[in-house]
Length: 350
Ligand code: CP3
Image (cartoon, rainbow, N blue to C red; front, side):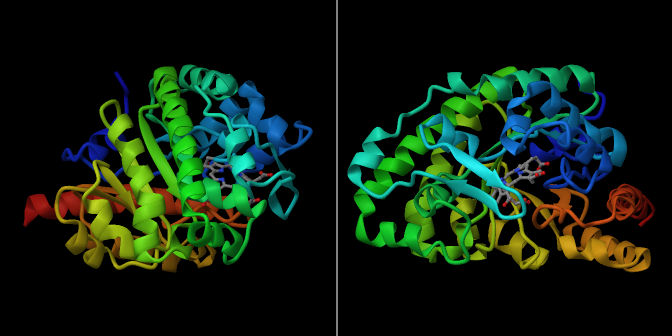
């Protein structure tokens, strides 16, 4: 059905003709075309809620950069909002919550959403699917319950997330109650994303790295694993636990198909820990794209040869930085396509 299903097949562990590539934050400020649409919206949240605009910027990187997948343009923070905790996105500062979760009463007031108040996301998926005309798969996503809890307790971004971690140590029962509500909401939401047309799902645990291995297992991975069990029956699921190599042995034991890697882990090491059953995704440092073309080319070739052509999806180790030059992003994508084909040729001739 899809003209280019490389990502979908690679995520299912199948052999592919070349390595698929997409980039976290590919729909974003790196593209002048994105900034043009963004400038028509009153603010970030209105932008996210405008299904036509969201669909438009979802499709842009496929056309402009030639990536092998679209990722729906939205934000992980739509779930807290749908549960009764609205946020604002403050220009050049990031997310901000007026109300935060402190007490049992706050936790009790949170509702589990059945997903029906997030129709603007499914509408955007529907529209983006139409515009994509079956060219490439579309990735749906959510935030890891722990990463969402971190924002909901802290009220904003933080270097340490110590308020949120304090809750894990001082009110663990309360934390688990909220995590369970977030997980159930996320499962309902993701199932509706899949119904609307999402072909794969990625769970972003951006703040995995602030937890100890034991705390991550108890308060984060347990819930991602639950989501993966529920969604994995429908579509391939990717778990991306940033800055948390310590979690890889436990991630290996979950039902997820794909494991996202940040740039701080050596691919050989990751493969050793995860074994042959998982597909790996990553992991170029987004700062590589500040380098000159020669360096980008050399590093991309190296990354491909270390990961190999099988059970691998090329990506960055985290989202694109907004001040990256669009031409370099395109060059990176082209290098992946070119050199993964060559890897295949070398195999044939060897
Ligand atoms: O292209 C894609 O990857 C899809 C779109 C996407 C966005 N946010 C759009 C966005 C995705 C997958 C996210 C996920 C997200 N949002 C995460 C997890 C991934 C990660 O980066 O670790 C997190 C932690 C958030 C929360 C969030 N949203 C923050 C901290 C910020 C502010 C930082 C910034 O770059 O300004 C956002 C805003 C945001 N989300 C932007 C975009 C394109 C930038 C805002 C703008 O364009 O004005």
